[in-house]
Image (cartoon, protein in one colour):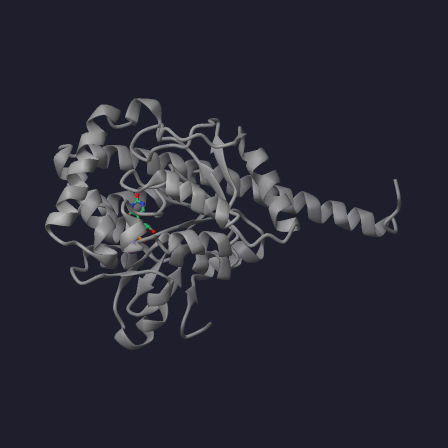
Length: 322
Ligand code: PSU
Ligand code: MN
């Protein structure tokens, strides 16, 4: 075991045996959701994965050390730590000196998941290009990380506060495939539709697993982004959302919020402005993403078991031409 990365025994064994594993991030509960709902959601996400027959791997930094497969105790500690940091990839090595707890962003989580051999990851909404990025240069490190870490990434689109059009353009530049799950409209995080179309639709966990297998066989380093809209009856009122987002950005300007604080500030502002309705939508879409991710992980696991059998068969028949 490395002193700089811990992989829990359960996760390490599941990966070794090719069992289905789903990675879960921690910034969503350290910075994205308020207490006490944050711990409940983190716990529920693990339960959804287990009930679907897969192994959850919640990823975060515990007392300076990146951990793949946090225990419930460690999750609770991070969720209640008033001084918890937000760790993108570049913050990960600093734990070796500061010894602090940190929630890992999608960028950092995807990197750690891939290092641990996990190929499916569920989250709420992706980071991306911020409004006004042409002058602030504020683009989430999630973008580059998703071009480098081959995982199936299930989300409900880019977070509503972002410049979604620019974010989709970046995914194209970075050669990151984006597919809609049973839709050709890119989802809008709290709402089902962002107003932007995507070219490709997949309709089942089997199809997602097949595309991912092809992507790996073609030696692509990027993630496969599966965009899964929030369930229809749980979306936020789209008319309400637009006005609130504008107010949220005005507040960022007014209060000179910068850097890593921007995203958590916006999410919290919207939660207060919508009287908690955005939080309910966020939790609902997260549940639905976790459950789809677990199905995809099972499919990938089944597929790799079958291909092992098939290549074994090909070998015993002398790699015959039949
Ligand atoms: N999705 C959510 N809530 C969150 C986030 C995503 O539903 O809190 C977090 C993710 O960890 C994502 C991060 O990686 O916000 C993006 O932050 P930034 O824009 O600073 O890169
Ligand atoms: Mn940023």
